[in-house]
Every structure is written in structure tokens, then in C-alpha cells.
Length: 260
Image 1 (cartoon, rainbow, N blue to C red):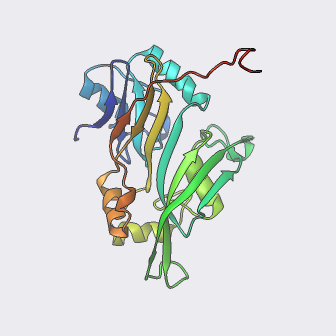
Image 2: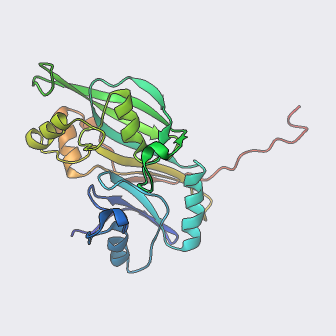
Image 3: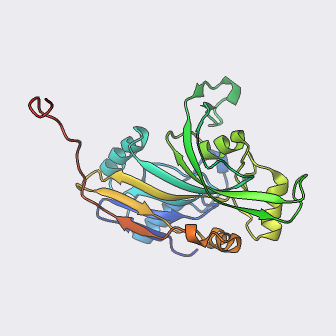
């Protein structure tokens, strides 16, 4: 197993690229698995690490771990309170809208009880079409097949939120076995060498829980998605591994005099 790609690390936290198909940690829903991101990172760094958010198993991209329980707890609260900006890239079927806010309540999918018994929870995702391509092949009932590159910014954190929202809107993510379309998934797997969910977490921005700075991270795609972007002429949208840490600026409090 190749070493994990570290995008950012300081004495308090570490951000890495999670490969598609790798579980973050052990779960009762995937008994028999022996490879986990948490264990690999621990072995690579030779120290304990503490998860503070999650990525679905088939999703690749940025994930952050605390290097102490206290840091993990503090940053986990930032995720819970929606103080973390998240950016994803997805390849979807069809011509997605130039810009839209998907505001569809979602029921949880934690497997603890039937989904119909779970109450709908508010869920919002902002999407933007960055590019598109039309292929002269019949994959569905049309003589051509259209696909879009979509930027998704979830404003809430429901399970499978981006995948479910895009599917409900009519633009399922390619490679999504549960919410997508099998014929398009097979076409990408067999003809375009892309047999994975084409959804990647490419950006995170958050206030550092210890240091007085804003941490803005960007993460490059894996080889599968990179080659697909190049094939479709989308290379200009390829993100790079990068770190920006502008000084944190706390909200200004206006005095009664300055407010007049």
C-alpha cells in the first residue's frame, strides 16, 4: 500500500488525501475489511490520530485528523456548527444547471432503522456547472451522451448528501451504484477506465482550533479522475495540492460610538 499523500500537517492536525474505496475506520457495516485510513495514517506517522469528520468509502479527497483528542473535538464542533467550508468536484450525467441551490430535506441512512421511519432533516447544497462534454455515443435512449463537471458546496452534513441531492435533481454522479444509473456507470468503467464514484473532496477552509489563522486547503485528484478530466478537455479545472493560511480575523464588534 503506497503512503498516504499528506496535504497539510502541523503539531496539532494533519490533512491527507483519502483514496476512493478506502474506509476511514472500522464499521459494523463492512465486516471483514482489513484496510482503514485511520490505521494507515497512524502507522505512517507513528502516532495516534483522531477523526473529526467523514468521507463516504467511494469518495476520495481531503480529510482532516486531529493529533490530540482536544484538537479533534474542537474542530469536530466546527464541522457540526457548519463553520467549515467544503468544496467537491463531481462528474454527473446530463447538462447540469449553471448554478442552483438544492434544498431537499433528507432522511438519515444510518441503517439503525428503516429510512421511512427516520424524520426528514434540512439539507442544502450549492452547485455550479464548471464545464460539460457531449459524446457521440448512445449510452441511454439518446444518440449522444452529455456529462457535466459540477462544483458542489454542501451547507449541511447529511449522509450521502451530495449524491442524493444531485440524483434528486436529475443529475446523478457517475459511478454511484446506489443513487446513479447503471448503464452510464458501466460506460465509464468499461470505455473510459473510470470504474469509481466520480466525486472528490477537493477543498476545505476552517479556522485553526489552536493557531490564530484560517487554513485553506486544496487537494489534487487521483489518477483516474485526472486522466478523465484531461480526456474531456477539463484540465483547466484540475485542482492542485495547496495550503493558504491567511491570518484569522475575528468578527469586528462595533462600539456604540462607532455605530452612530
